Amino acid sequence: MHQHVHRARPVAVLLVLLALVATACGSDSKGTEASANTTQATTAPADLDLSGVTLRVGDLGGTQQAGLEAAGESDTPYKIEWSQFPSGPPAVEAINAGAVDIAIMGDTPPIFAAAGGVDTKVVAVARPKDGNQPYLQILVPEGSDIHTVADLKSKTVAVAQQTILEYFLRKALAKEGLDIGDVKPAYLQPADGQAAYSSGKADAFVSIEPLTTITNSAKKSRAIASSNDYFISQTLAVARGKALKDPKVSAALGDYLQRIVRTYQWEQDHIEAWVPIYVKTTKFPATLAAATIASTAVAWQPIGDDVFKVQQDQIDTWAEAGAVPSGLKAKDEFDTRFNTLIKEVAK
Image 1 (cartoon, one colour):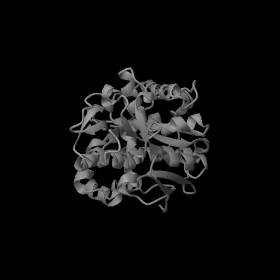
Image 2: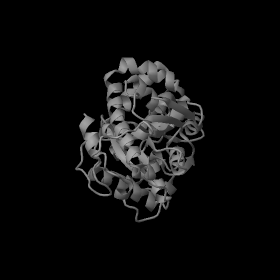
Image 3: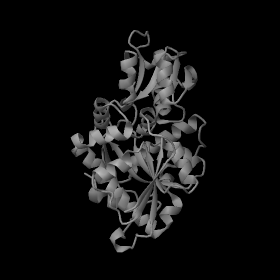
Image 4: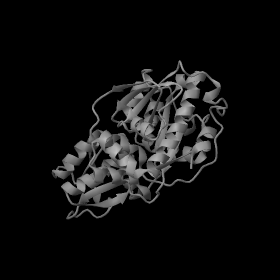
């Protein structure tokens, strides 16, 4: 198989952190299968000649390509053209431009893609294996007089705008009867937010692992809230609508998704082999890489009503904030044709 790589920008530790927003903590319960929007894929790639197909894959942080190669899943019957992105939104932009056929990202960018009329469909879903892993946190300095989320009122909070991080902050504030207007949000990308918080320019920081570990080494902190107390976050495979309409490209997508599911499992089953590859790809220190892999382990599952419910809750939160139009339906974001293929290989 021939593989071509286009790098949208260099891979660096803090850029990879943006991609890791994809796997905030939750449960790995299985949902009922959905039948809306499509029919199940019944044609296996082996039944079609895919040698003329080039699948354009958006790789957030560079770990998808490295993982497939390490797991022995890179010998595909079609060509893969890789493009690297630091986070979901630019990958969605590339999908919209017709330059990418599929990318794996967090659950927030597809909402804004749908709101903007971008022709995308979510074709696979994963949830963290450890529902108790506090992947997202609201951090305050160890000696701060802020002890609860309610204490954030009138405080400056560094948070990445229109991301799962801001969604987490909004959910936490709402539980205390507050909204985003009751705090002073400093809208910064995670790396910039961490720098502002560490230098004392922000009273609190909405963080994500492994940035939380990095932050603690720079400024001793404690968490006043963890995301697993508020919502389930989902990792989504997002495909270009036109790619799904092409039988051969659709078949290649189904094959690729099965390889991704097996690859993710291989990485979790072969930590000692995967860590040095991950370190080389992300430039993370080895100890931090191992902790990150452990804290971001996910399990792929069929798309079902439980998935729609979680996504709808986030849609409604953004609609209430005026960030997306009201009336968006989560089901419309999804295409379930690959559910059977996912079930065949998911553990």
